[in-house]
Image 1: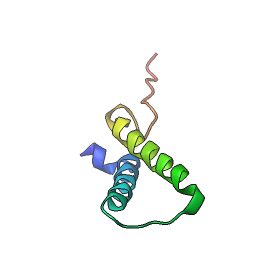
Image 2: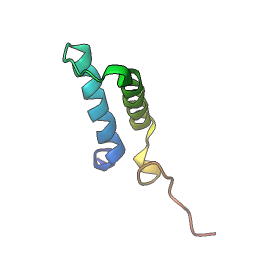
Image 3: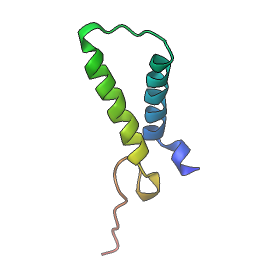
Length: 67
């Protein structure tokens, strides 16, 4: 359940939903910025997939202060 408390996961899911909606015909007209928009959404989806909240909060790892 730790994964569902992570903002990176929800950002990735939101980005994926936007990409999926565009694939199924919802038109979002951004003009000349459309390639940049798609690249940003793809990066956000990949970041959410690669994120592992069991190793820390968000994208940072846990720090071991015992040593």
